[in-house]
Image (cartoon, rainbow, N blue to C red; front, side, top):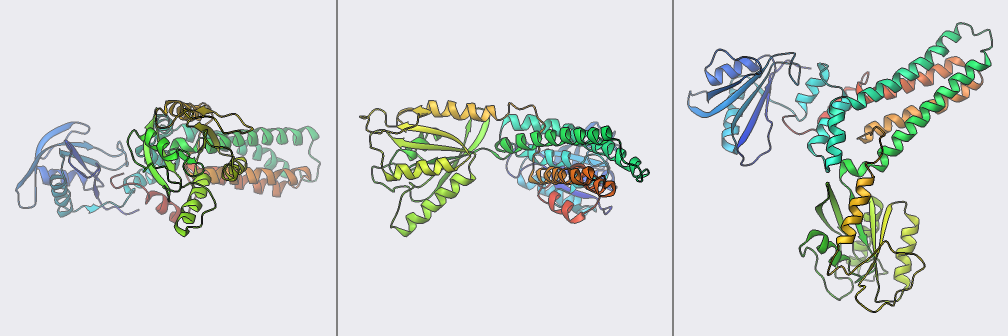
Amino acid sequence: MDNDTIVAIATANGIGSIAIIRLSGEKALSIAKTLSKKDNFSPRYATLTNVYDKNNELIDETIIIYFKNPHSFTGEDVVEIQCHGGYIVAQSILQSCLDAGARVANAGEFSKRAFFNGRIDLSEAEAISQLIEAKSEDAAKILAKQVKGSLKEFIESVRDEIIHILAYSEVSIDYAEEDLPEDLVEQIKAKLEALKKQLERTLQASKSRAGLMQGFRVAIVGKPNVGKSSLLNGLLNYNRAIVSDIAGTTRDTIEEQVKIGTHLIRIVDTAGIRDASDEIEKIGIQRSLEAIEQSDIVVSVFDNSRELDEEDKQIISLLEETQKQQIRIKNKIDLETKLNVAFDFDIELNSKDDVTPLIKKLEAIMDRSNSSEEIMLISQRQISAVEETMENIDEAFYPLEDQELEIFSFHLNEAVKAMASITRPFENDEMLDKMFGSFCLGK
């Protein structure tokens, strides 16, 4: 890692009351002194001061806070300059920092420096990144705990347990000419089984609650003209989709975001699923099938006023094949009942009048997803590492049965490395560059 002093605007672009420019590195304090023409800054005290450009022209009256190393986010000297919000003022101060010897920070470079200086580990860094983009209040609470090290503690406990088991094996290798006591083998197997079950629970809980992190995706499906677009308009509380009695009006998927309860969700109104002759409509239908596959919750809509037909049966067949959470709706209940199906509906309504029952059902499902007390993995990288750990634990059982302890120890060592990669991997700079490169500027 280089010793350059880096700078970035840490607040979002646009007009606001305050903008923050962040500096980190050995020249951070001297740059602050140059811009402000002040000689003294007390660490962690807010100092009201003017800042000037290289031509000694006033830019703005600001507040400057100095964080002396190692007691800062990055572990280096850090200076934060708070100015009046707005594109021009913040950019002028940024340019003055560059003129004074800083360089523009790369995406995620502040967090990367915090990692290399031991201020955070990778699990905490990922939690910081995702907390910024949290899609629900529950997700924000989980991520806040992980920023404080809850996942780190879990990983270390699993790692320590594997190392403890490994110690049994390493000691026993010294006595390879003797058979291991039967009770020792059983003890090791029992410990591995318990560890594997713990990781399986964590993995399953993380996958089932993925919508908390990324935002739940809800697909509305059904044959043409059953009221899907009316349902979408009702959820959004405005007419986003065109509604008509002509089948096939929606010819492509429509996506919108809406907040339900404490969750921000993405709703996908799909084209009606049927055998279409129109090439454009066929593409829309294919996208509808993809939307089902990519969704967390599938809302299927059936028309109470029409008899069950082949298109309905096609929808039912698709629903039977998917493992996604489902809500089945009988729509247009204000009309004469002609629909006859073998299953019970979760909700009966008229989507043109009131979609409150669906809103309540969606909120209940999403709230339930956070009922588990299991620790949560928040990225595919973390999930893959736990899966690799479990694979190595599985592979370790076979040589243990045959008392081939060197091979057994090899798999447990690989399991330790896989778990450690979640918090602080031994190597792979390319992976670190890619991960921190996905962060926003100024973080």
